[in-house]
Amino acid sequence: MALERFNIHLAIPQKVFDKIPVNRKLAFRDEVRALKALAVKINAGRPNEEMTVIAKRHTCHHDTNEPCESEVEI
Image: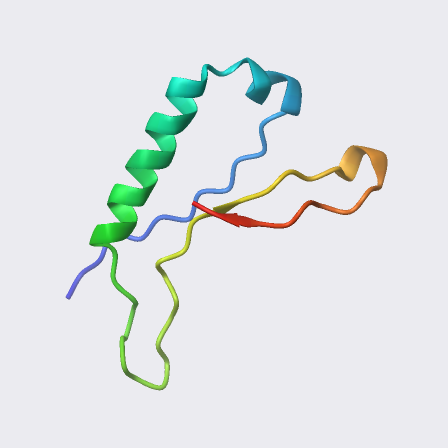
């Protein structure tokens, strides 16, 4: 079976992210959750199964050499 596979890595500056309206952030979150509901594990049940139903976010502090905050499941 052919699959559409998405790997999205975005690093948005905190000042920019803070300016995004809450309703737009929630709409993005809701759409990601809806897509996760349709997603499947690649090779489910086989020894080479891949966990491909993953969506997480976190705040990182690489610019200040501080550790990243914990990842949160979307």
